Length: 213
Image 1 (spheres, helix red, strand yellow):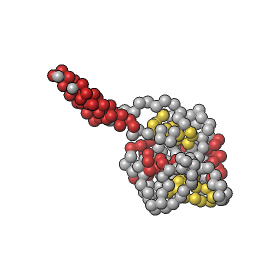
Image 2: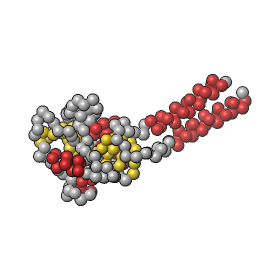
Image 3: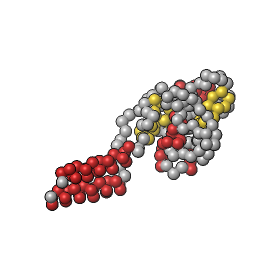
Image 4: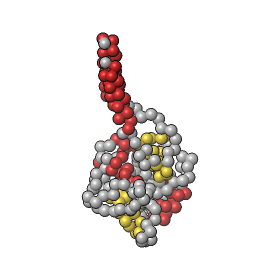
């Protein structure tokens, strides 16, 4: 009986931990969103350059976007940058259209893995509730670092289609800032109430069986 009770307790713990394991985006408050999977922090406002009054519409050349991100001070941090177009292992950048998608760059990972985006479809059409953490997301944004093969070319990621594509650096796209690391301790995510109810029922069964054993 003791062994069976231990198994039930393990199941309860597994149910609870599964809920928190799925929460990889955390709202840190103050317009900052932490991506636990990549250990980076995003500005919640993807077009903060416009919202803050720095730029009339947020459209910039790559040089302007890069300079804006590197010169930004926000939330007490001054180490902001453009999102990386490289894969986690440093390879890339990849690019493609239709089914040839780039899912491992920082914006690609956010679009596909964190927000449940679909290739060829705007991120605003996804049902993932985490999309609501961000503002002005249905845009195309410059990325970094500089493309060494062709100095006239740089990559952007389009949240209206899930594509990472090259363009001339003089083209006009949005600038979105990100920084490495977390900005503070997160509050504990609220567990799903149905999981709590299920855990409570299992705990009650364990207690009842313990009394009748």
